[in-house]
Image 1 (cartoon, rainbow, N blue to C red):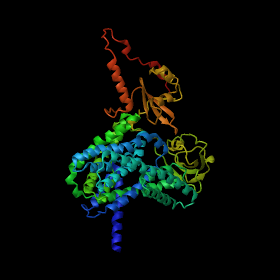
Image 2: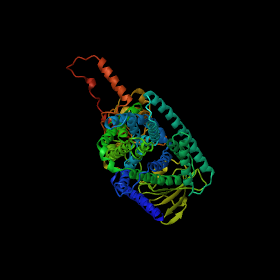
Image 3: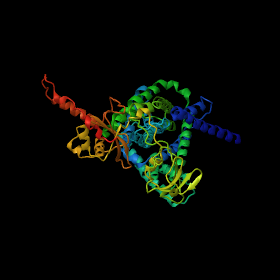
Image 4: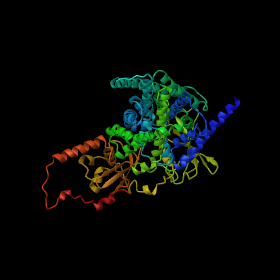
Length: 629
C-alpha cells in the first residue's frame, strides 16, 4: 500500500512537471498549449506507457472542479470596462451562438454518423463552447497585441458560454437516458423553461456569493497566507450551492469572480497571484486527466467522419452562428471573421463528452471519441493560425507601452491604498523629466545602494527604484510614465500617421485644410467628437476613420474612452483586409437601399462633353502645412 502511494505520487507529479516544461516549448514556438497537455496524457495512457484510467465519474468530477476554479479566476480578472465594451456581442455568442452551433453541427453529425437526432444534437452541444484560454495563451506567447474590442468579446464569450453548453448537454443526456422521444415543440418548451430556471438561479447565487466573499474578506482579519485559500474555498462553495438547488454552478462561480474582482476587495494582488497559479494547475490536471481517459486505439474506426465534422465546425457551423449573432452590432467584417475563426474547442468539450458515458448511453463512447478528435482538429487547424490570421485581417496594433518593471506591495490593514515599486526605465517619460502627478505620493528612492527621501533626490534617472503610495484604483498614467518606449515593428512605423492632430481643434479646420466633404453639422464638432461619431459613438486605441483624402487614427484614449491623441495620414497606413462575407445589418441595409436607388434611377443619356461633376476635387496642397506635426 505504501509503495503504491509513492508510485502514484511519483507518476502524477512527473506528469505535472512534464506539462509545465511543455509550456516552455509552447512559448518558444507558439504551439497550442492545450494540445501539448492532451498529447502528454495520451502518451502516458493505456495506448502509450500503459497507465489505465477508465473512471468516467472521477474524470468528470475532477474536470468540473478544475473548470470551476478556472471560471472563477476568469471572472476575477475580467474588468467591468471590458464587460461593458463587449457585453452585447459576447452574450449573444454565448447564448444564441451556442444554440445555433448545436443545431447546425447536429444536422451534419446526423448524416455523417450512425446517431439519432437527439444524439447528434448532444454531440453538437458538447462541442459548441469555445476554449478562449488557449487562444489568449497563443496571443501572449506570440506577443500579439490584439484590438481591445475583439479581445474583450472573446474573453467575455469564453467565460459565459460554458454554462449554456453544459446545460444543453446534461439536459439532452437525461432525455436520451430516459428513452424519451418528445415532440419538437415540447422539447423546445422544456429546454427554454429549464434554461431560464438554471441560469436564473445560477446568476442570483453567483452575484450574492460574490458580494458575500467581498464582505467576509473585509470583515475577517485572516492571515495573508490563509486568505487566498479562504477565497478559493468560498468560490467552490458558491459553485456547489448553485448546483445543489438546480442552478448553473459554472455561471454562479464566474459571476462570483466577476463581482469580487471588480470590488474593493482586500489583498487583491495576493489573490490574483494565487489564483493565477491555481488556474494553471487546474488546467494542467484537467487536460492530463482527459488525455489519460481517452483511448487512441479506438479512433481509427471513426477518424474520417470525425475529421470531416471538425472541419465542418470550423468552416461552416461556427462562422454561420457568429455571423447571425453579430449582424445587429455593425462590427467590421475583419473582426467578425476573426471571432468566427477563433472558436477553439478544448477541455470543456471533452469534459462534456464524458456525460453520455455517465448516463449510460448506448453510443456514449462513440460521442466521446468523436468529440476528442474534433478538439484535436480544432487545435491543430485553428491553434497554429491565430497570429497569422490576426495580422492578415489588420487586427494587430502596436504596443502602447514598452517594458515596465513594477512590483505591487500589499499594505496590511489598508484597503484603499497600495504601495508600488517602479524601476525607472531608460527612455521613459519620468527619465526624460516628466513630473509624477500630485495624487501619487513618492516616499522613497533607491539609487546606487542608498535610500533617500524623494524630495532630496532631485530629478529621477534611469535605474532608480521609486516607492509610491497610490489609491487602489489608480489610473494607468503611472505605468505610462515609468514604461520605456515601446519597440515598434518596422512594418508599424507609419501605423499612426506622420502628423499629429489636436483632438480639441475644430473639425472646420480639417474642412478648410483638406476639403474632406464634412457637413455643416460635422464642422461644428471637435475633431475628437467627429471621429467618435464616425465610429458609432465609441472609440478605442488604433481605430481608423477615412474622411475624404485623409485618414484619422486614434493614438490614445483615456480611461473614460475619450480621445486624447490623434494621428493623420494622407493614405491608408494599415493593411486593408477584404472579407467578402460577414456583412452586418447596417451594411446589408445600405446595399439594399443602394440597389433600390439604382433600380429606380432612370438611365441617363450619354454625353460627349464629359462630366465635370464626376471629377475628384483637387487636394489643396498649400494648406497641408497647417497640420501639427
